[in-house]
Image 1 (tube, rainbow, N blue to C red):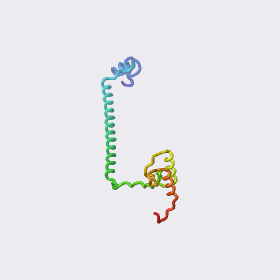
Image 2 (image 1 turned 90 degrees about the horizontal axis):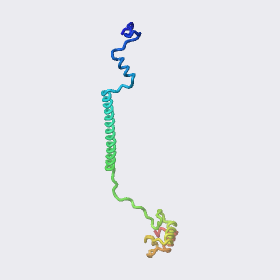
Image 3 (image 1 turned 120 degrees about the vertical axis):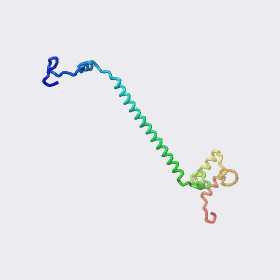
Image 4 (image 1 turned 180 degrees about the horizontal axis):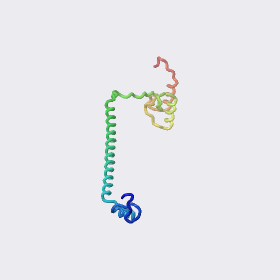
Length: 156
């Protein structure tokens, strides 16, 4: 309509296109139900979105499994390529008379042996210092005697 045209009802305004007045009345009455086309479009967009999420999850799993497999293969390869040690392991040094296993033959060994004897414990034949076949107080005294004796180079 032109600016100078009058409203068909005689009022001074613009006329609505055909059918627009009816659509506006329906809109004013409440929500307009969505058409099937809108429903289909929304469902298609949701399905596409879910498919994209699934594809990303699959690739993420592939990446994790591939990374783990590569790390395991690198570990196996490193173990195989590292030089292998040959021979025997070094044997621990055993100090004769070291009753408590601290690596030294001292008064603590004699004390531990005496205490074990007083409690009636069975001691291994290794502790028979007198070599008489019996582990007793005489073996403790022999241990103490060996601790305090002075060795010369001739005796060694």
